[in-house]
Length: 94
Length: 330
Image (cartoon, rainbow over all chains, first blue to last red; front, side, top):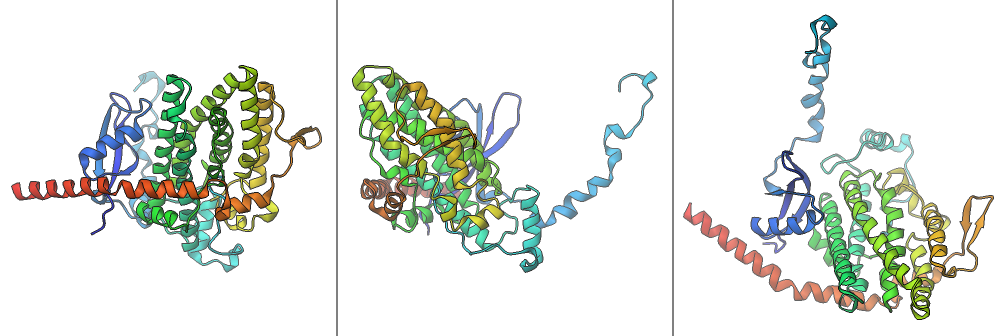
């Protein structure tokens, strides 16, 4: 068994009211140490108010090769955007 | 620079006709400034070259802590000590961002560290020079980190997404490094005659090693062509070196110090400062392991790794035991 500490992906909430964002990764023996290390590595200059850590092996990701089938179909559905609809000025803001 | 003389895994650049469809598609993305991400297809040589470059860059950040760490306990005031400690801590973080970027290419951090310790990977030549007096610490922050910034700002546009994002993060922090260094040396240059003499001595000794950081001159850089085509490298060694000289000369002048190179002169026609080439034979010697501190640096790294083994193993054993206990309880 390898003695390398597992890899954790780190997510930081930058400010109250914002969502957590992926900022990078680090190695740690367990979740508790991962949070401690993340605090030292990623929040030394007030970058965060909350930390999530997730073992990298637990993240499932879409295949880059599927980009077309996954995301292209939404290109043709322009009616999903509010600007698709012309509303007369007289109606007021909507 | 922090990554000097990176061998590209292949020689020569393929023409479009020589490329496979996959390679052409890859090159098109690069040419259109679309970042390459970890799970995207990439040529094996692109991956290998990046691992070498990012790995060397990471090693440089970590080994770079040694010449400065030397002065943490000797800093002249508590404030300077706290600042230096914060800077050296940043360098450890920079190493980590870069190892993480290399790991997304499928190379483990432990493996990169093993290659360094076995002498099969390198770090920047600059860290094989000693820091002899306190002014050296100012000069390192100002000149060495200043040179690093020139390189790393360019690398923010590198084609590999994780490397580029690591550079963005690092550049934000490097600016503190350069400014604290210049601030420290300013105090000395404007201080007593003895302090000024030490500041001058530090600049004299560190100038040429600093401009060597950008690597050999373009005409000698045999590995650059493919790296430029792949946008692993964005600007040439000489371009970056000139940029560094141009920005630094007025800063030396402001300190009232003599130029460390008598040939530094504004060239109206080129719109740049002229300067002397460093002694490249010295550079190649240092790269080959014959610099003033190569042996000390490697010994310190290997010792730190070996002395820390029981901590790494102990924490991992504890984590595994705890996980097993939780599993049994469920």
